[in-house]
Length: 294
Image (cartoon, rainbow, N blue to C red; front, side, top):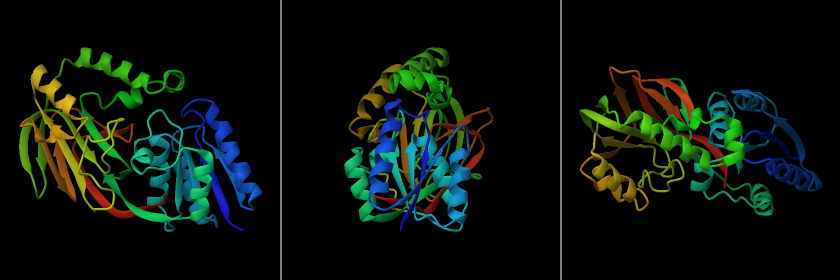
């Protein structure tokens, strides 16, 4: 008998998500699986429960939540000796990683995916002692994810991010950051508006923000937007939809196993939509650290 631990964040997405999770649990129970559902209440609950599950005899973890909840489960796996396969059921405002991996959203399709147990081991990013599934970032708009109140996300969905983003652009007035970048592939000191250290290509709902990113290549993708005028910035953001922004002269794009970022200013790091400390920091890849069901 297979044992499945379901970790569910009720504050991610709309309230209908709990009904979807319950439907999945019923399908699995009817098929002979042993199910235990854990509901998160606060930050790090998903990580702690994952670490407990890794010490016990659970066969699969199903995580239902946004990118932040998936991040906590990945962090729990990375900090454990046993690598339990994880199935990601999208339910947050933005589910970049699940969308990038083309994980089914339909409950029947998701249930069939679990039964087949087709797994792959994907890379994780690491910054200091924190891990990220999707992206670590700083600068313009990157603190929007953790500034939006959970209740606002539940009511407005993705629109909550856009509203907060518009407010931040008005407040920041495109203030640049003096950034020092050091890696084998690139060394620069530059005034920048934004930096992204990405594991996958889909970030903040944009599918080609790091267009060459691959969670299986053992490399991070670094995107840096230099200080730009409004016209150049508009051109860069328009081209994000096609991935052509990386060819703009004000955009630096490269791959690396490790990169060090430093600045004299107090610049916050966003890790998978949550606050992740401040620069300076070293970002590195951890190959094949996270086993997921696809």
